[in-house]
Amino acid sequence: MGMPVYANPTDLTEGQWLPEVPDNAAALLRAASALLRRATNAAIYPVDDEYRPTDPALIDGFRDIVCAQVAAWVGAGIDPVAVQTGAAGGVVASKGMGGKSISFAGADQAAAARVWAATHLGVEAQDILDGLPLTLTVQVIG
Image (cartoon, rainbow, N blue to C red; front, side, top):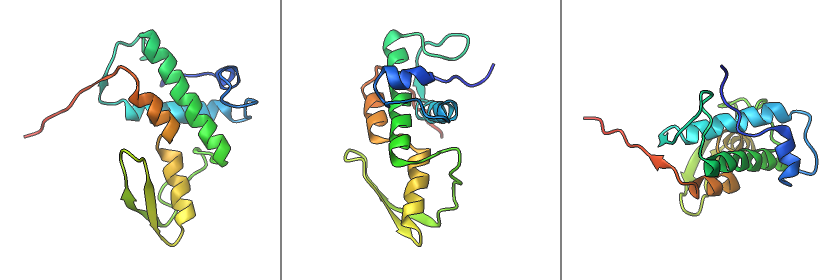
């Protein structure tokens, strides 16, 4: 059993996220699903045998998050599979939370921004995630 992918290529066009399915849709959907899995790592929700959510609101929400992320990458010309993390040369100078902003410092700010965009949920995807009925766990150490 592989890692779950929460959307399929036709969801990208049927949901009007993109006008056409990109050639690398399968890879983009896998990468976006991996980001979503990391973002929900501390969440508790019922899943099936393939670790996909069983709650209809979560099924639809996870699909929409993955599609929104793929659409953001395609719109920005970012291929997360091709981005080499750490090769950008820039560092995060500041991050925001509510305003969802980030700034970079270093020699290659544009490359650092591309790495960030390839490895973090975009604004629309995060907004959808924030609206889902998920229960988060907190582990207290010490």
